[in-house]
Length: 185
Length: 185
Image 1 (cartoon, helix red, strand yellow):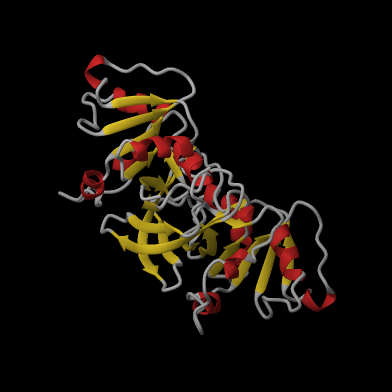
Image 2 (spheres, chains in turn purple, green):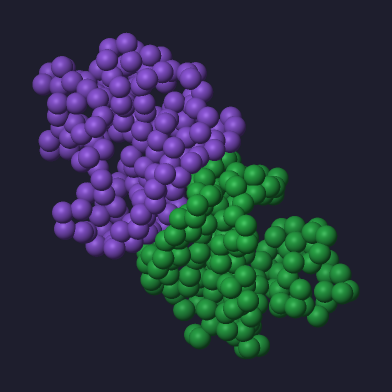
């Protein structure tokens, strides 16, 4: 497979990507901002062809004052139907399929580098052996509860540390490659 | 309070300190060893006056061929009675009390720097605002399930990153100070 899938996400030290109600304002309030620092996001984002996300992440994005993925191909994985506003019909696709099938479809239609986002979607792709790289920014806060980044697996997943970097505001960003991805599920 | 409490522990990237059955052999098998490298443990361990741990951690240590805490004061927190072998009666105490009471007792009896170990014990001390520093070594593996390092909290805990270091075998060690510890519970 020539297609690659990456995760680029922030979590609390105790592994939550959002509070239980989806709130992630603690991301900004838990540490001082660094002027002009985006923790590598723009560079990563500009390199991906497509985003795959679950319904909840999609609906959160739809709620923003501006659609955050303008001009990018967005695939929403959902077993139920989703609302796609008319102005996004060209950019957003709804697929009800397994991670392996989604990746096959994306590859057949020209995608080469895919950004996989959202807790359950990331967990499904990890389980299916389809994540090649993860960039995780650990925020210096314990939340105690919320939406977890990781979930149950059928077997251990060995990782290879590529880079690790601490920022002056206490964020620690680690990038891992996944050793033994299955080819597809 | 002049007494300080620290955590020094390894976790999988998904936050588990052991498998559900207590096994932690993945700690050694998940990454190559580094000759002579103990990730700062001996230095940390030599600086503590006393260890506080739960019954499970204590019983795991009892099962080792050699008692791993020889010469250190060990306090076992447990609401049920524990077995203390005769040769350890001078070193091991059983206390059935809250984290705050344990720390008061330790302070009154001369302890200045306490190593708090074991998932539930760490969680109880964190909740009580009694942990001053945490050194967490993140192992490059996802386990999917097991005994978690962190648990529910009554409120967010803000952390201050002190140091972060990546080792050539992919371990990432981060050390945090806790901002707003309560004085006692």
